[in-house]
Length: 111
Image (cartoon, rainbow, N blue to C red):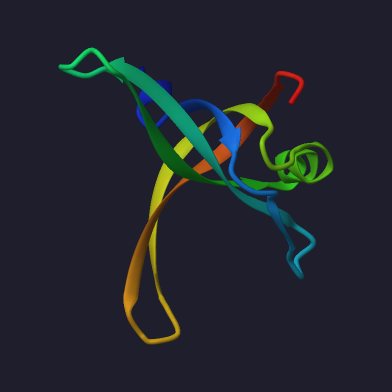
């Protein structure tokens, strides 16, 4: 069960083209967000769709695949782990972010 301690699996669509960063160390970083949709019927019987956005980062070979093949609107399945970090913005305010560090990516559909 140790492999399940911090494991995330999501299927969703990219909201924008990925941001690709080539670091001085030679590593490649891809940053993107995906939307997941969940539909349900409310008390009045109306269909309601709830959209959640997830920040995703990918490194190395996975980032290179993202750079070559993944664009806005594409449906992808990702697997990775949740990470939390903080940073200070230009105004000196502390910001917190939760990201999925992607270690596997599967392109779905023909979109």
